[in-house]
Amino acid sequence: MLEKKSRNTWESRQPCDAPPAEEHSDESIISTPSSNSKAEVSLAVQLECKEQCEEIISTLESMDVNKRLQTLCQITTCATELAFMKTGTRVVQKALEVAPPKVRQSLVGVLQPHVVKLYECPNGNHVLTRMIEVLPATSLGFVIQHILERGPTAVARHRFGCRVLERLIEHCSDADVDGVLRALTEDAEALWRHPYGNFVMQHLLEFGLPHRRAAVLRRVLNNMPQLAMHRTASHVVQKALDRCELEEQHSIIKTFLNSESPYSIEDIACSRYGSFVAEQICGLRLGVVSTVRQRLADAVSRLKEDAFGLRVAQKFHLVVTDASQIAGGEVAELSTY
Image 1 (cartoon, rainbow, N blue to C red):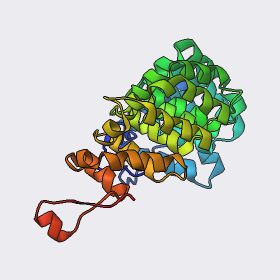
Image 2 (tube, rainbow, N blue to C red):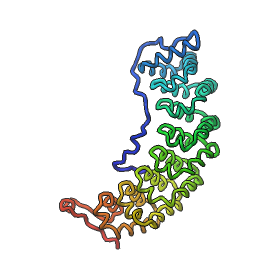
Image 3 (cartoon, rainbow, N blue to C red):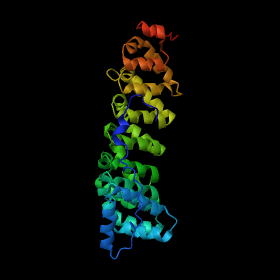
Image 4 (cartoon, rainbow, N blue to C red):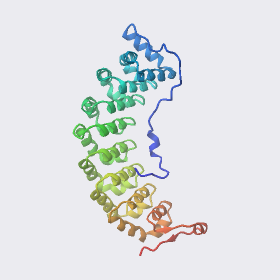
């Protein structure tokens, strides 16, 4: 993704990481339970204190196989409680990483019925995404099925559910998530505009196969100028310009050139969010970019009067500013001939 000046859209969905654990010397944290219920109460209560989290994670990473397996057994017993805890989520994630295949299978079996609750939880969603990362793609059918039952577009619009879809798009084959991708494509334009759904669509454009990108583009091409000026969708337009085939990039730019006011190429260049799209066009190696430059050159007087338009004009080298001109409040035009 190209760098975006003063764009803070990404800040709204930074991962909800648990605070760092402090050191603790209590070596008695892991003990052999006399019953499953006792193990559940013991480990869950201990993890109410964030200081204990690092100790358990250290045990999971240790070379002491017996101690590690004992701890994994305790975690599996109370995984459905730990996964939703602020500290417990980190322990379950680490357990999924280090567990041997059979133990991991048992742990996943405990969590499997709770897919929806996990992705809806600010702590549990990290467990589900880690599960997607460590399991073979062929073992993720139960996650995909829950999402299909819930509705992929509804999951894409969820603050945490969008992360789960991103991981599935990254780690699963196109055939495995065919139903999910088709549903997302059918609702493409609305998702491009959505504060969380747009991240899923960006992932689809980045990791999807060429025919998936083409299908998405067909859904939104006619409204591309409006999307380019939209606060959220403009990010996806930039991703499309970055990832789509040259022919598709050309189609996007031609749509901009053929659009009339209030969504013309000049309007896009002078808009807050469209200006970033216009700047990206400047860097593309397409013949049609020269046509964009000429259109903007013809409107350079308008561009100079607008803060966003001026930045685009400078990107296309249509105007030059130097210290003396800035001091005098003037901007010089460059000849386009």
